[in-house]
Image 1: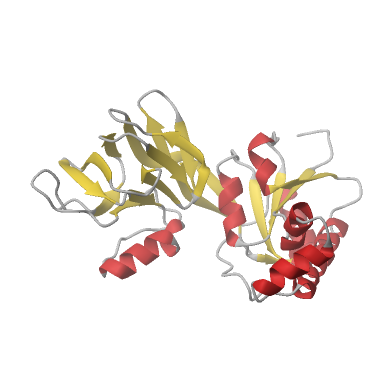
Image 2 (image 1 turned 90 degrees about the vertical axis):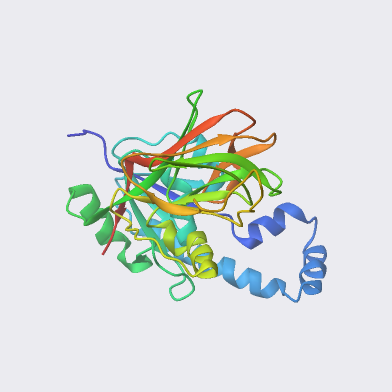
Length: 296
């Protein structure tokens, strides 16, 4: 048992007002740009005020003798999380996905500062729930979902984790060329790329692809199973369209690049990517690491 007081890490995004203040030299300049977009500075300021009030209430719910730190989403990849940290992700569902791949066993409590504006798939607690949730997390009595993550491993050892999905394709989103292998089948393809989704991600990007193709995949957030979906596969004498969706369980889906400018990124963050140029090979499968998501 640790002799140190519990440590709570608050993770948040910049608000629109934070970004505006960083981009414009004056309120008048910001107002002019916003009004041309049909927005008002007052609305942005009001949202910032409400978020700041919620953040103040959350901090007040943390016991005074506990340690705490606040970081922005952009700083998560450089932050060193301790094994016993409790992470509060304050914002939209996507913030939980952004922080998940940098954790290893820490409990994440998603706090929704604006109930009714988010889907609430991953941010399951309200601001008023913070104190009780923290106490239960530290005691080890909070209910936790072990959510499956996807892991991409390149032939030279690099790896990438995702809570929602991993994208494989061309960096410019032009036609991607590769060979796809899964379940004893293999096919050369030219497409808009493919995604390999988790059960959590099945409600996001994967859902839009499935809806457009009138297809389905049996995915669960907590079962070690992924699904791959090829986007707009193009039939030609050299490329096929038969192996465009499927499940990934014990054996990985394997993709071998036949293009220059290929890329692999996770959870929609294109800046955090792996190069996937001609001849490189990636295996994508359920990861041994899980997101430990607190649920009410």
